[in-house]
Image (cartoon, rainbow, N blue to C red; front, side):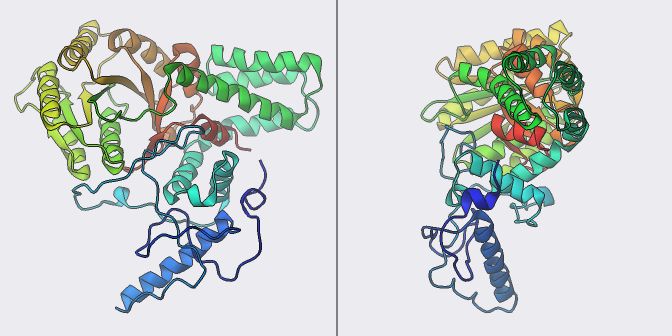
Length: 445
């Protein structure tokens, strides 16, 4: 991958460029002037923002943008496709908000460090121009890269040591196989990726850099296969019909937190949303859901009685959503072990209620997996797929795991598309999954 400047910066030099990447201003947005690199625009926007803050502090109007300097374009809808080839951008609508916490804060332009440069280069490699990039995307990619640092450090450092500068050999591929398995990539995914590399090695000499590039391509293909099979590159609520998303999984994987982040993403993206607090077993679960709902201005349907029937809560929520013409119902379910058949049957009952009350609804059943659980997460996926009719996976807690490779195991062995990934505690720390960005972050040397 070439440098950011070589990919984005073309054209004559300009004095004091003053615009930014995806930061809305009070001035009408104009088309970015040609020839400014992403770094130049970001630097100029930071300078302009500092001038505005200083002007406000002394109660004077901020100085105007210099003539000819392009103000930054407004950020695209939060659910906009960061996946190559998917371009579903929706306009955000205002939603009532509770006072912002530290984790609710708007993304800020950080230092021009390695994370920033890498993020910009990854976006540029996908054909994105500077005027198409939001600050939120730059911020997210930096956090994704940092989130996968433990996996990358354990994997890439050893990989580069094994490869050296000599062409690949069968012995090196055997050692690479061990590294992939230790990263919880899974047996099937490892066999598929290295099988293709071994075939190529039989017909030509492969140097280390070409071997890594080819390995990246194989791993990306493993992640993309179930996404293509689903017929939808980007999972987003469908317009003009009710969408019901069930979030399932074992205790402690972050289902309720993920639900809150999805609700925030939906409201920021212009979708009307409602939450069904159907986890009626865990103490304080309903109250936790209400807190998340308040943070995004989303109504929560619940039953205050002890040990209420989760199916009854879902029944009420769907009825309320249909009467109000809402776009999306997010259903929080009780955590359950995949080995508890009575609880799994209860989950199947909830699904039957949804199918009966809203037969025309677009239903998604998303398994929330803790990335740190490794291969146990794969076993959960296989078991839940039978009871809940899983359609996708949300991978959480990547920022604290050295087992980020489990995404490949789930995609290849369970055949489930990864739909969202989380790497942080903030309300915005959940994004639609992008296989290109994930593999680049995982194998960035």
